[in-house]
Image (cartoon, rainbow, N blue to C red; front, top):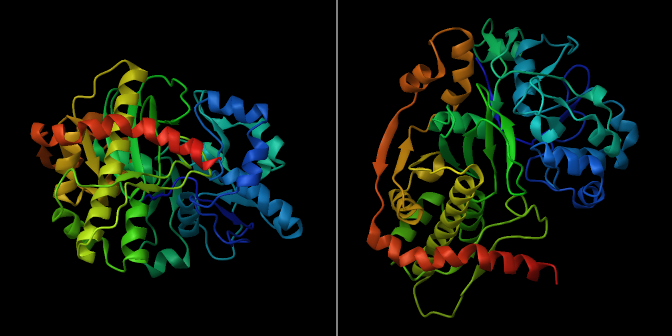
Length: 420
């Protein structure tokens, strides 16, 4: 058994694995602490090493908690991502001290990891500047490393007692492997609460809009994780009071070329700007039914997210001097056939929809360590399935190409306006 979970989420626990503070979610921000850190040479250096510290990174939020409640913070023994916490929660018996704790090298990244070494390590200077002791951090190990047996009451309660436990990875990395990002040149996008583009490369080339993971098998994974689909869910459920499935249905009834211009949040990527929220432009009073207006808004959000996805396709091609011939997709955001057709047309590339089983990606390194397959290629060919392939429609491409090409230019201007 293994686990994958959100990248950048953190739990602060005592020596028995009990949480001391509420979980720090990946989307929460610590803007003041982030602004303080960004001028430190250590933060600039770790960015050159493929990782970045932003307002949503765990470290600024840990700084804030440490300063606001130092007495309680002294009870903290371990700082862990959900992946590691749950695995050890299954491993240790109740009341047993959590010792010799480790974290996989993908979950370690956003906490402050240096991946430039053969064996990744914590980048100590950034923790010193944040006044956070590295003694709170577990050791770093490979994805798929063996932990031990599941021995806890929780493991017994859910029917997993005695299971062999292996270190997992972030959900973004698991999604990348599940889309087929196995060998150099492979590219895929995880479409969920966040848009997670991933490209497999042999070396990392620093760029302010992307970060790098050490690939669970070989090389590196270049990627990003802007919050995108989460906004669509928020609009449908919180503002309009309808489920996302119904929002997609309303969007399908709308005609193309009638959308508003939608710009996703730029707080995490590509701008790392904590002030840049989502923006909808081109709104006019229209004497149309409410459902039609909602459909137009949802369709506009879908198009804006697709423009952002296209931006990363072009970025990876330029950065690595390569040609991405096809785009493989997985995740909840691929369940709309209309959206997938839009993607193929806007990308101007074939789109392959992969079976939505992200956990299979997390299991591939485990399967290789157990020698269930001779190599990663055989594992991928056996475990990963293409559900559908969609070719671009040139007529649809022509409808959106002018908007697509103006998208980033206008988004950059909006970023500046947010600071006035």
